[in-house]
Amino acid sequence: MDKLRLYTRRYFRNRMAVLGLFIFLALVALAAFGPFAAQWAYDDPDFRHLSTPPGSLHWFGTDDAGHDLFAQTVHGLGRSLIIAVSVSTATSVLSALIGVGAALYGGMAERVILILIHFLLAIPTFLLISLLVSDSGGDWKVLIVVLIAFGWMYPARVIWSLALSIKENDYVRAARYMGVSRARTVVRHIIPNIGSLIIIQFTLGIVVTIGSETALSFLGLGVQPPDVSLGTLLSVGAAGIESAPWQFYIPALTLTLLTVSMAFIADGLRDALDPHSQSGGRA
Image 1: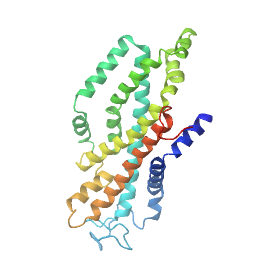
Image 2: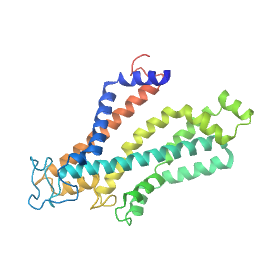
Image 3: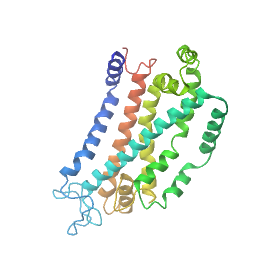
C-alpha cells in the first residue's frame, strides 16, 4: 500500500497525465451512459433529416442515411474501447507469460519462441490481418482474435530481454534452489517485478489497437455496418468532408481525444513507476 500511495502521488504530480486520465474517464462515461441520453438509437434513421448539421434535435447532426451522429459516435466509441481493452489485456498477459517463460526455461523452448517471434515480426502483419478479417463479415469478435494473435510478439520480445537479467537475481535463484517450479516462479516472482513495464505496455497497447482497428474499419476490413466503430464513422465521414464536415470531424475529434489521453496516461505511468524519473517530482 505504501508503494501504491507513492506511485499515485507521483502520477498526480504530472498535470498532463491527470488531464489524460480525466479525458479518458469522461470518454468511458460517455460510452457507458451516452446511449441513455441519446434521443435516437444508433441504427434508427430519421428520414426527415438526412445529412443535417448539429442542432437541438440531433446534437451532432445526422449522416446521409439519417442516423443520429451522437448516438453513432457513442456506440462507435464504446465498440472501439471494447476492442482496444480486450486486445491490449490479452496481448499483455500473453506477452508476459511467453516472454518471461522463454527467458526462464531457456534451451530449445527459448530458441523456438524467439524464432517464431522474429519470423512474425519480419512479415507484414497488417497485410495478414487484413486478409484474415476481410471474410469475417465485419464481426468485431473475429477482429479481436486476429489482433491478439498478431499483437503479442513485440511486447514479448521486450519482456524477454528484461527477464533475462531478472532471472539472475538472488530471489529467483533462491526460489529455484528451494524447489519452486518454473511456472510458479514466473507467476509469483518475475512477472510482479516487471509489472510497471506490463502496465505501460497495456496503456500503449490500447493506443496501438485503436489505431489498427480504425485503419482496418476505415478501409472496410474491420467493423462494418450496421455495426459502427470510430473507424467506420471516419470512413463514411471522409466521403462527404466538404459537403457535411461534421460527419468526419466529430468522430475524428473523439478519436484524437481518446488516443492523446491514453498517451498522456502512459507517459504519467512511466514517470510514476520509474524510480529514476524526476518528471513526477521527488517522493
